[in-house]
Image (tube, rainbow over all chains, first blue to last red; front, top):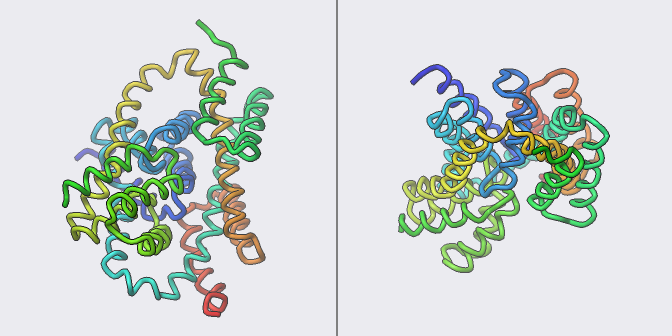
Length: 178
Length: 177
């Protein structure tokens, strides 16, 4: 197997192993590991991938690793990226399933997890800043961001509807070039 | 049994848009109400436990249910079936999107979508903050992680490890009570 495929696999293996708190935490980790540190794709393209992951079925972690894997290493890249991101969690979940009744009563696991949960919050919040920098580029984008936030916060519209509306707003505000 | 597990989780994988908690009711309806594979109580216990592990909630739950129904082959079948629909759909989109993404229309659509993605993540942060409660120690860990990542370039994995160790010492008395 060539070099880039190994790198894709191990990057996603590492991200998957520490992806407490689900989807957006993975987004933040990919952002840090693959965009900022390795520079494999541009931040703008990554946000587009997150949007696509949000609109399509399946976990955001799986969707974004499949897409990035494909982008970096073709079909095999997408296979290895996807396997990488779910491998460690699946092995852990399997161990927990086998020893289910023992794990229910392990106190130190609860203490550790109580510490990790607020860190996950910080990790996701950090993504807002880095992604925000390339997303809020002018007054139009700020208007769209505020409108969509009010939509999900006050009107409880679904994320998919929010993305569809924002895409429409993009066409209206930035024009429909033929 | 393996075939049934595959079909059921493939279906779940096809219809769970948005990830995370959006998936729980879908999985519950399929596994607990329709198939009656495990009881409601066991399902909730399994969700609570697998949710505290790293990784997507859907594949972790599939691992648990698959193992309970058919051992290790069942667990593997469940995970593969859950991930397969999104894998195939994303692959198709990835192939297609790379050919259209430079068109001006698509560019403008995504200029509108990018700020919306940030808004969705901010909303997720607010919901998460409400659910875990930001009092003294929690707030300290959250802020330290946020500032460390933003200004000191700390890796999120380092933040997870350090906060886990801190949790061990911070919360040992609290949980015990």
